[in-house]
Image 1 (spheres, rainbow, N blue to C red):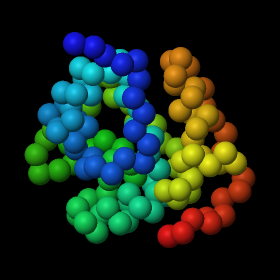
Image 2: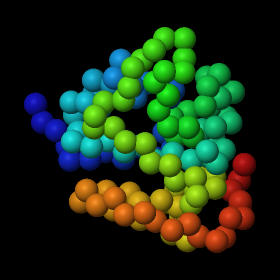
Image 3: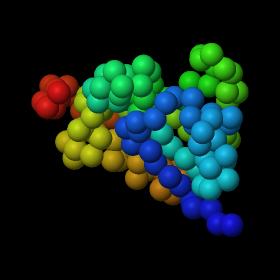
Image 4: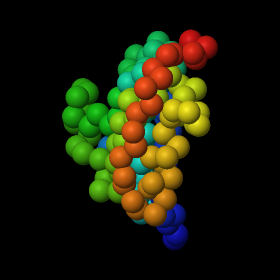
Length: 130
């Protein structure tokens, strides 16, 4: 069996407990990658609002992992999992990859294991379609 160096979930639309050790993707996160990063933003209009309408919970791409807040305690996240809150630079779902703001620098920083903080752009105007 092989393992990749890193995986980056960006604005992921799945339930917040699926990334927990006992969650749907817990075993895969623990065994398939040396590092799994979940880039999430509380401002992600799609994953926070539209996903919640369908699934009755915000997605992990809006709130990060939630391993002990539900009906069943899913424990904690695997050791290889890290939530990365990019709410300061991502003001809607379409911003993750925007060059003038977004989180591409934070993603690239993790390619080599370097976890430098990225600065937020002063332009907070939401020009997304939502």
